[in-house]
Image (cartoon, rainbow, N blue to C red; front, top):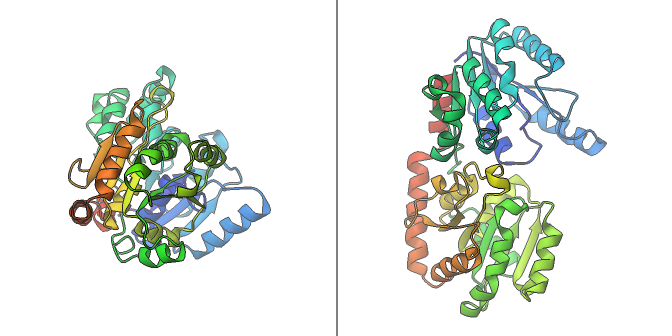
Length: 383
């Protein structure tokens, strides 16, 4: 593999699924062959200290730009070209194709032989806007490969980039560390610590934003409690919608059955998945298709932990579920979403054998298709 410059806005300690994807991939490449050029997460003292501490722990070189958002400006492009030459990189990997992939022509002139750009859910949104489609086409023409998460994102992006670039698209989804997310990940102990040892638990691990559908889960709780009165909805993660969700639980009279953990450290996430009997995130598509779920790695992490999953039908989320085998897909944006979600969860909570079968099938599927080592090898080949 050529020495590679990873150019990205999405890198820890900034939280998020894309950040975890890029970091996990980078860790599985030879550290001597990786240089990361990333934005700064936060400019306040706490953010700068967290970023410095994180970067110091990495086995590869991390160079931070002074801005909190990298854009393909002349200054940023010039700096990326300088780093390419300084470190002897021959490949460039854009952590998100749009908009940073617009720097591809300059980096090729600076000596890059391979240019790979990864697409996520937001590029699928860009593909619906005329001006943004033109930018995507430029990125597709200037790079050697565009990667895509799943069939949904490919089907949206391919028409925008044109037939020649579309023919060079390669699937590169995020993976799952099956050694970290597994049925014995500490869930039993965490349930006991939370006082939930003898209660049915529906767990949702995600940022608290409207697309993720935690409000649908709360709206489903009255129906769930009517069938399984001791059920607890464990909502794991932080985000701007927490207070709104807490008020909703209060209005519906289910506040006592909904637990919010707040943000959880990465190292503690496997145990929080394992604390559930069922994983559910009935995500929805918003803003006329501009705000969609690119894939939904949390469904696969839950499957690796041995849980059946209930997923919404937003974007590429169904790509992370074998409907009827590892769980079910519900219509996240429908008026009847809460009713359909409740029906699926009640069925799962009331059938131990069904939960076991779906959980085992999900675990096996992750081991066969979604392991990080398999996907990192694909990236090495592209670079």
